[in-house]
Image 1 (cartoon, rainbow, N blue to C red):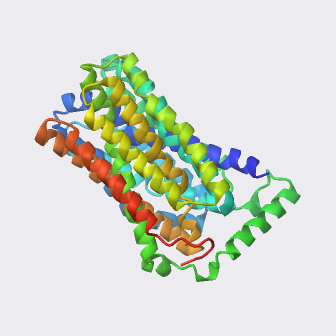
Image 2 (cartoon, rainbow, N blue to C red; image 1 turned 60 degrees about the vertical axis):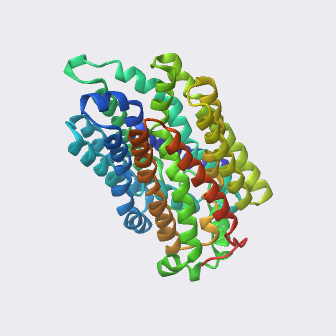
Image 3 (cartoon, helix red, strand yellow; image 1 turned 90 degrees about the vertical axis):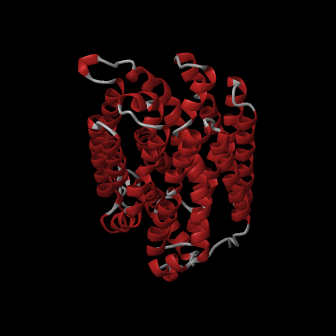
Amino acid sequence: MLSRVTRRLAGFGFICYVVAYLDRVNIGFAASALRHDLHLSDSAYGVGGGLFFVGYCLFEIPSNLVLERVGARLWIARIMIVWGFVSIATMFVTGEATFYAARVLLGLAEAGFFPGMVLYLTYWIPASDRARVGALFMTAAPVSFIIGAPVSDGLLRLDGTLGLHGWQWLFVAEGVPAVLLGIAALFVLTDRPAQAAWLAPDERVWLVRRMEEDRASRQEARGSMTAAFASPKVWLLSTVYFLNTLVTYGVFLWFPTILRDAAGGGGMRLTLLSAIPFAAALIAMVRIGRHSDRTGERKGHVAVCALTGAAGLVVAILFPHSVPLLIAGFTLSQVGQRSVMSVFWAMPPMLLAGTAAAAGIALINAVGNLGGFVGPTVMGALRQGTGAYTGGLLVLACALVIEAALVMSIRLPTNAAV
């Protein structure tokens, strides 16, 4: 029965998250064209890439609190439809200022989708299964890169068609699915298990009882928004996530350019090769999530994955001009760093319940995603200042080492609420 819930809700969330990631990182595929047509420096491009997270972080917590009140069905649909139209409107940017504005607006529009889905799945999935189900949902990130590389390359080849630049076609074609999925959310999502007409009556009763027991085991009465904001563990988790997100977007928005510069050009073959690290991460995320659920261990899995990611970035630093070794290094990096996500989001619900879960998960995501501004910005500034990617990649590797140390310092009880 839980497999049915997973297929319907986590499966739909996965598809939506693929589109979300495409709309966040498609500027990475269009970086060269954008810098040329909009006359952007490396530094300006890096700042613009990261500005998405300024708007995104401002509305994370209010968005999750609204979702808890009005339900995921309406709120997720609203988020997706608005962000789809904003993504489409990015085709009208004309220079540095409008590029910055478009990125901030996209962040504002998408704010709340990811923490909203994480919170929503806690209404349906018992704690013992959350790393596995979370991994299935979060594999959307590497899948978006695997799909996005060839799709974006094809759209960029439409340059000049109907008088539009290739990057304008990219923003339009990759924004429309968000609008359509937002409409579909009204029919696919159900707010709570008790309302699930698509489950048999006995399955519905079992799931409602199971989730009530799960909440009771975490002492939900103690879960308040004040408790979430006052908890040192929540802020420590926010810092861990900040460091991980810094690396995620430092890599996502610069990897296509790093690879293209090492190869001396682009082409479909290089585009397909660039999908290898993310295909490997896709497999690793699911396997590591399952292993964490099976053993019940969380912190060690996160720490080992972070250190593996750092090791991969060191390989990329040591061999900056070798395409095969760059791909090998980034593959190791993505296998480790992306697999952190499989397990990390199973940790906050061990500390949070009720309103505290809505506020705390959003707080962790909001603070953490500020790393999405820092990562691309640091990469761009160091690239412009030194003419190389080495300094930026070294910062990302150090962030992962610090992340591993911090997560091991957290005292994580088996069942407790702050």
